[in-house]
Length: 245
Image (tube, rainbow, N blue to C red):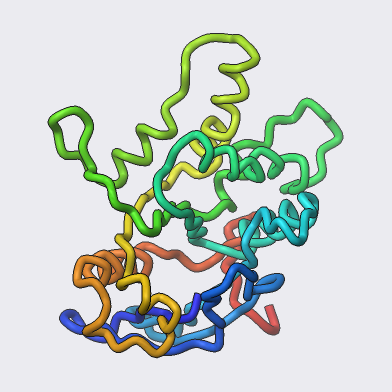
């Protein structure tokens, strides 16, 4: 992620360059989790902390355990989790998000003497809201002859199959976890931001070279994040305030 589109006024967008490098080659740029802090554009005395994680499923890294811990850390540190993928939300895209099925194995909200204790409600209280950002989206948002919203597109992709076979269970597993633990869900679809030759120079590309629909979607995305993102809380409802807490 090389740019933060930051809401300045009701009618303007300020695009500021960040120190997050944008890769234009096949090699992954981000390693681990990178952090950037900016004043919240709408809430005085609040800081917006942006966390950019390395891509999951890097073929050169080939370490699923490492990816699972990165995903778990992102969930624990965030009040809004943005998951981005390319193209469409299909079964393959959901299978790549299988890390969500590991959350209850890797994260314990509190210790309990009873192993049968169901701490699902505790997870839902501390887990972030979830946004699926679909990049380079080229399809029409239609189901049959009816136009649908991006949110309806996501909910349709998360619909469970009926049945009890192993295939049905494997199909439903990531969908069930996403539906259960991320009760607040949104979806935004973004067209390709610029022509292919310009994508190599995205960090230096002037705004007038960007696709107008991409800019419009980015503005709506940022407005949603700025208005809906809540301060991070920990068990007990305590707000995370940083040093000296």
